[in-house]
Length: 275
Image (cartoon, rainbow, N blue to C red; front, side, top):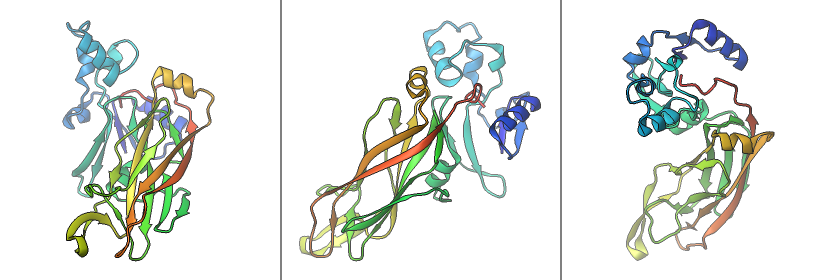
């Protein structure tokens, strides 16, 4: 379900454009937006006595619109997602700084560990582990925050080092930089402590199946839109870096090349207004 300050007519048109079948509620006086504490006051500041203040101008471009201030922006919300339990209580929320960026539903569900998206994956095996990797979303628009997922299963009697194992090469993901793609900090599953008796050391490791989430955002700035114009797909390349050991031996650090390709969908006019 979504809540927006837009009228029923605007929401109906938008839903038809996007093929949306879930409920979209109209909140034209922003009463519900205010009750949730997410009324975008920057829109009001941009029309007030401090409208020419450089900080207000900068905030307007970040949190409201890249167009000029206007009365039509009064009442908008800071865009975000609330997760509710069956009793209607908020259990978590997800908001981005830039108003044109959004977390996709699939990436949110993965972050919460609630659901696995129904997308095709690529399977890779090494002498130490089996890897299945896929994007949370097969199709993405500029400004959408998705996750590149790595489901990793160490082989029997094998462990790989987790963050905090300072003497070893810990498991990580490196994404090749490319213009207008933000790479966010890698998210790890919880690790466990492994006791290596010969050295009397305790280190964090993964011995059981675990998941890595590498979130990325294709930017939606004017320069980014120009760079992506006419491009139907986005390919991200990188590598999984790790070091594995068994109960007797530690093996040389490994680097596994990886690649993800998603389709790019057009950004419709008005789709990134604060709602």
